[in-house]
Length: 318
Image (cartoon, rainbow, N blue to C red; front, side, top):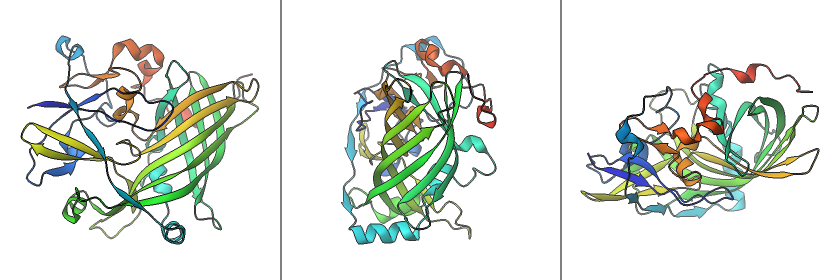
């Protein structure tokens, strides 16, 4: 089976050019969801730490080109109607959040050294009067410091994906009626009584879709999508992406200290592993078993497999 790499060109202060790995599928339609086309370094794919073989450590992959799907921005009136009709909270919470809190824990990179940071979203509630406003509560963890925060996400624009590369059949095969992209701003203010607290602020990029469930329930009608793989010929293809470039959603901005006003870059994603190689070279390595490169474990990734429910208790560090 031939191996390919996706070059994920994400807009944002954190992202630099690099690559990650995957395997090209056999396709009868020519276009399939990238999740089917590859074996990417997703959170689900590395839910337990595999052993790294010597050949994995030196795996090298040729790049696969990336093409951003064409979109048509909705008018302000249609954007408002869309936001009034749909609840986007499942973008962050998911349908199973009430049963499994870990579904709302997201990883990211923080500071100039790209150290691991985690965010747990405890609640995401749509404002009753402003349909583009979502009120957020949660907690962040950086190293051993766990700090509660509250804030908001404001959706500023929505675009509908209308690209000739995709057909109605492609969307239906992936379980969507329609797919969209959205942009906005976020502000998350940490509790000032905690040592080392501050405020997160920046831009949010979301690739969202309206699910086409056969089941009667619509608990997760709005969901995120990642990317589509388009086969060019037997040996090549391109990855078709939205604003999050395959990660579902991105929070891309900065953290500012209350005490010192020091500013540090931060990037958090629904699936950070799909863009991690754009941030740290060869962050994900391996072919049969995709793993975090051992040389980056000291940046907080050595505890990724610990499964500790750190969000259950947060006491001020005095």
